[in-house]
Length: 181
Image (cartoon, rainbow, N blue to C red; front, side, top):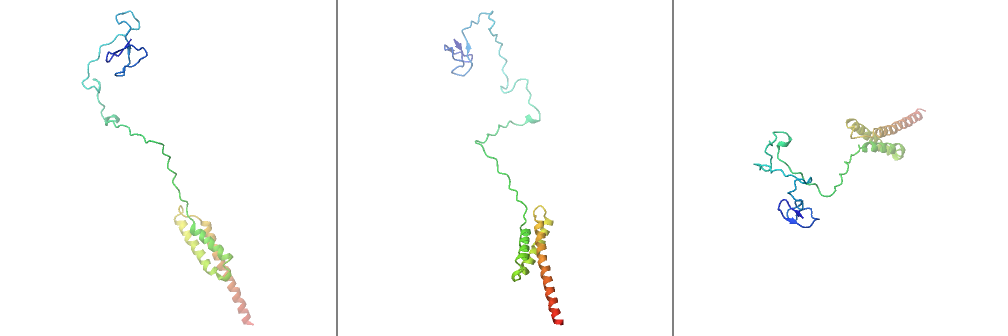
């Protein structure tokens, strides 16, 4: 037979371990309490005196300052469900648009610009874009790149104008020599 020490209800079922009323652990009531020679018998101590504040022991003093001085904050509830991490920040690479435009204009000037004298238009554009790009690269090296493209655009535009100047000089000398005869 088992007994609940809290409500003193007895249970005849031997398989029960806890009281069905209050959930307290049941004690075996079949052992005789009058046998002082029983080595398994437990001696009960008297109950301690009641405390003035049931939440604090009698010899406990609250801490002064430090981490424990604030009021208890209950933990925040966890988010339900798994959240994937945010994607990495997109790092925009440095731009080199004007340098590439200078290179393209310069190559067009040297290769196709000789036809119909289109190089007279695209040559100065290549030189101007190249100089503008070099100034941007010098002032903002972390934002703009493409220095080799800009230099190549300036050189190809200048090569066209040097070739054109040389052609005009040769043509002028030839006309002058014909007029002298």
